[in-house]
Image (tube, rainbow, N blue to C red; front, side, top):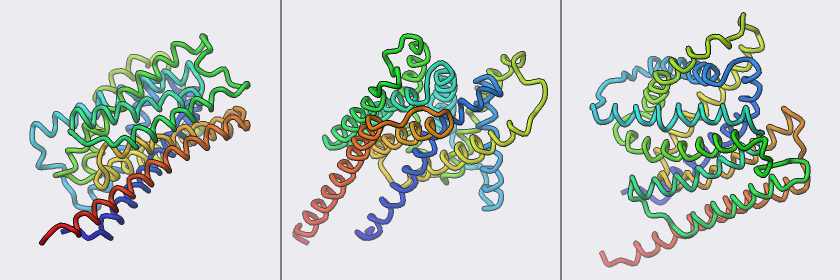
Length: 316
């Protein structure tokens, strides 16, 4: 039987990993806008994932882990994760952020936690607590406040309509990623799961990138190298591994509240990289997001404590 301390440590580790993954995910939007000044959307996404899969394979080799023992069903699931749950939302998000703003991208990604809760219930039959839904809704309220700032046109700006729709579709597709990937960790190492799913994403992204070859830059630049080190080597590699590893410690549905970190990271990234305004309204929205996440985590801790007390009172 797993001790209470072991369970608590596992949850804390999972929480730290998913927090890191979402912070990096939110920071990816301004970096994507930087990358889109150098490459078209599909090519950028291919390079992003390609530069992440190389260190994954190196780590597997160093750890003497081989990509064997995968059943046909598991490979089929990994293909769905890598394409529908990974490559498709990445391309939609990249195309969307090119036509919208970093702040709008960080707002619309909050459709993802709702779809994670939905798909975790539908596909994995996980119990969804009312406090999870309440915390996510509170975070969404905070994200709405972020774009009510007078200096940001937000979702009501019709010039960003196409970009916002693409970003919304990206968020819904991202909601499939976590519930589809979770069962693979029952038999496979998180690094292996990440490597296989990212590799499958390249199968879809490669042809898409080739269609854009007429828009490729004439020569490779040092700026492109630095951009890919940040977007691929840091955000894609570290963020994706952290996300998959967190699923080894947390139920899929409990990943959802941590998506609330992304608007904060995206907004701060927009301020740092593109001089987007950081006002008191934005700070108030950020406070609501933090409150939504904190209330969800406190509620989860109280429920686990009550469950342990009830277990101790059972007759032996």
